[in-house]
Image 1 (spheres, helix red, strand yellow):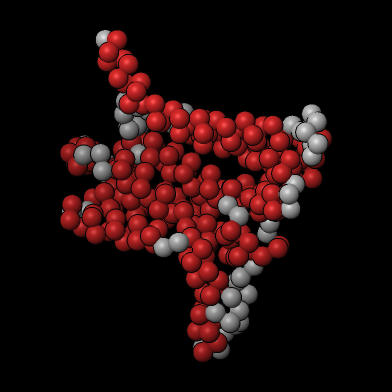
Image 2: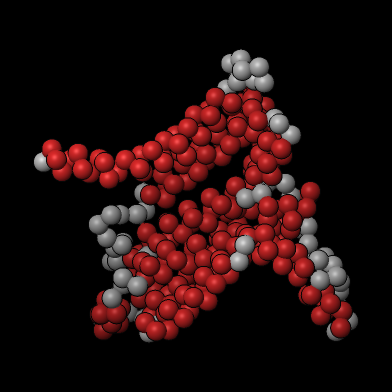
Amino acid sequence: MKKKSLSSRLVGSPYYVWAAIFIVVPVIMVLYYSLTDRNGSFTLSNIADLRLYADTLVLSVWLGAIATAVCFVISYPIAYILSRAKASTQRTLMLLVMLPMWINLLLRTYSWMTILEDTGIINSLLAKIGIGPVHMINTSGAVVLGMVYNFMPYMIMPLYSVMTKIGRNTIEAAQDLGASSLQVLCRVVFPMSVPGIASGITMVFVPCVSTFYISQKLGGTGYTLIGDVIDTQFTNNARNMGATLSLILMVMIIICMLVMNQFTSDDDEGAMLV
């Protein structure tokens, strides 16, 4: 047993080293800079100054929540259709879902700038039928659209992985007992897919709130999010305030993950509603 325990520790040691260097040390650095000033003296003024960014933080959470909700509404039926398709069809459809993720985030965002700008593809088509131009770039809708497009696969994947575990015999049993298609969806499929919903919400909401490149390019200066502020702080060598904002963002993310973990279970994928 001692040899087995020693060998297990040796095998896991690279992970512990990696976690210490890239997780523990950065967190300690963030804590240090958030509680000190430029001279390294202890201070709480950085935390007190957070009130100056309250509106930005609320806007980030609000747009992130909207984007997450839109992702869920679109992804849920897609994931269900994928899970009920044939195995060969599933592989093809999943490839189509993941294909945009192979393209760099910057290129995908620039593509939407080309599509949405006043002289872009959409307005050029609208001009041919005598409509427009419609101002779409540098709006909150453009920011949400960019978030949905870039992060929707992170919602589809956990939903799909959970729904594929729902056996066809379970759905057929519910139908044999007289349940309609809507009842099967609401009282069988949906409750059993709650862990996937929780995982998908976490995987989408967290990057939406902390994003900065999408909001910069699609929202302009009118929709500055908390990620933009953090990026600006570090760019301007104001790392103490940037670290404080990063700390608040980390706390929000941890809270979000703790709340979502309450809807997941290691033993099953959910329970049917009686």
